[in-house]
Image (tube, rainbow, N blue to C red):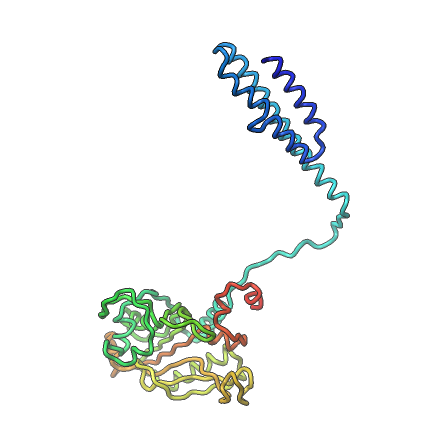
Length: 344
């Protein structure tokens, strides 16, 4: 047995030295170190030998195996280096050429517009506040002048978490306005803040709607807030986002927690007011809703409506992003298609 191990080691070393490619090296490994190799068979046959002989031959067989494994690793590394040298020799390397450009990540287009909206309002003195996405019915509806039997609830396709509906029922917020009530309960006027965040509604997804979207709500409360303050604030916002030469229009509209209510439109970004398919021939595109806060909303938060007044507004970030960049389908933003996202 000992002579057989010596002969096996000598033959393995000679064949390893003559291996000139990765394929030949792999053939050698299977023959001498594989599960069905001669060396593995010799190690298994030691079990039938007497204990003293098994101890001596076992130590020698293990030594042979470790030596061959070491030589195999060295040969493998040597062949790898030779392969690299041959590749470099075949292809000329010009060290003066510039390196490959590094690819950098960038902000999602919705996040970019989010930051721009917050920056515009921050410059006008508004704080940026965030709130919970899982909200109570009281803050999402009731405290905003929308009680259980109010028909305005039909405006919101709500995703409920609790099946039994009450003022303590939980839901995925349908707008970011609940944070306005939470802030007015904790802080007293003067107040001036915006609330950006995700909102959710039980709607079918199409080119202009999605079940999850982003909003920015704003609120200002003080002793001398007027409708003119609201209009000037939103006019300045529109010009900051869409350009100083953009036409802005303010018209009356209905929202359950403001009175009077209004909607703000900008001059169509495609036809510049001439009328086209995008603006349905009107020359204007609506971008947000707004109005003066209902007195009972203020009183419900412990603020005296005879002393203080306020205005509120809300806008969809996806809509503003679509108008700024001419995107024709809201689903592109969340498709994960890098061909689309790299354009921003």
